[in-house]
Image: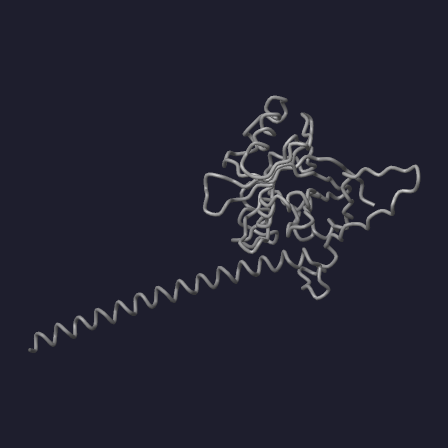
Length: 286
């Protein structure tokens, strides 16, 4: 009987130890999960402040974030007078009010600003001078982890003069960063919001989206020789033929400048979601 009680006591102690162990493991897991979401929300809040430019936004590093926000689309021009013609497909101008001088005080790696009307994409674009993958998991203020930043790699000139420029961003579940690009999977949305704006310090580049598709996870900067007609044409044709939305009526001739926005597709590591656009206009900053 004594031995039986001793065995029962030993078994109870083992159960208690197991409870303590798994309870502690759960507590640690919850702490790390909470810390992850707090860090992520802090990073996203910083980008929201940059994006929204609210009057009550915090002042980080002595710079008012409200001063960095691009304004809404310029007012539509008045109807043409008799004898004047207005092209129906001319993209509206998006005023470039980005204060790059103040942005550079925050981070010298910022070199452009991307805005896509109709989506949540309204962010600075960065390029690290040494580590191509740095901004995959760092914000412009150096905070590690998601949501990272919108960025390009050193292979691409910062003036977007290459035949193909690729920008990367995370597919965030709440639609931030490049998460809202997936809205282009809808045909009506694809048709309604066709333009991408790249603000540079002295000018703005306008691109028209011609494809929003599932593509392989090939490394795009060297996937084709975009400087040669055969490689360029083959890439454009692949994009227009891939699963998703594509407008074959949009001309993308050899010699055009392409902008490809790349993000992930859920847990599908074998494919990327690409929004591809061709430059159709350029205008100087007012």
